[in-house]
Amino acid sequence: MSAVASASASAARPRARRSSAKRRRNTIGWNILGLVLSVLIAFPVYWLLLTSIEPTRYVQSASPNFLPKAFSLSSYTEVFDDPVFRQDLVNSLIITASTVLFSLLVGFFAALALARFRFRGKSLAIIIVMGVQMVPLIALLFPLNDVLAKAGLGDTQLGAIIAYVAFTAPFTVWTLRTFIANVPRELDEAALVDGCTRFQTFYKVILPLTLPGLVATGVFGWIQAWNEFLMANILLTDNSKQTVQLYLVSFGNSPTHGADWGGLMAASTLVSLPVIILFLIFQRWMASGLTAGAVKG
Image (tube, rainbow, N blue to C red; front, side):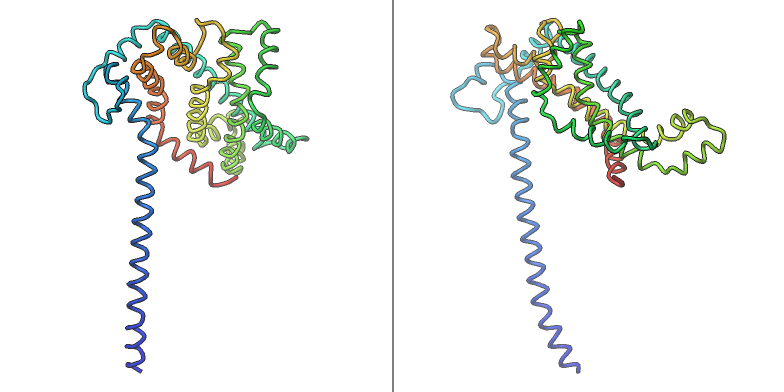
């Protein structure tokens, strides 16, 4: 009996070693693949920063430089000194912040109704919210522009905010509906039994529990509104009301800045900073919010 057990153990050891070697090879292969993909993703960002801090004579060199030969912040200084950039930055902050605020306000109450109340046509409303997100933006943009123009809101920041909210609200409603549905209804009933009104129940019970979801949805809404180019290009033709995304285009096409790649990359870096800072501030909230939203559909 011991001889049979010894033979079995001896046969199992080579199989275990082969299995362990195979796992190591797979791990090494996946690590190499991940490293290659990380380099491919990070290299454009590195090239953006490298171009923004090098003098123009090195940027326009026939042979590319993968390491900086000189360091200069003149491109950033020129962008900051441009009053058009500062005005467009303010415009973007106003439009984006207003879009996120109104999207969360409208989206929260709409999601609350879809998640907490029973009414005729509820299933149809959910299908419409989901279906609107599938409609291509370009298919509705020009009719929306005509409607805003007839309402006296054409080429205005208020008109742009309304358009932005119209396209970000469905995503907000759909996402927040999941977060609100995760809050047990027993908490609503307990609050009502304790004497809270329906509004107090929403304000004191549901809202605090869905706060991570609100933050996560708000950050994604901010990214979507901040990076929006097509709507801004169609709805905002007045240069004094344009956003920083349009500034980057005009910066690259203007006679004075057309060949200034360092300045263009510096402006692109500055435009990216608000989104990066916002993500770093709220990354913990976003992680908890997305995890909570993934628990229950």
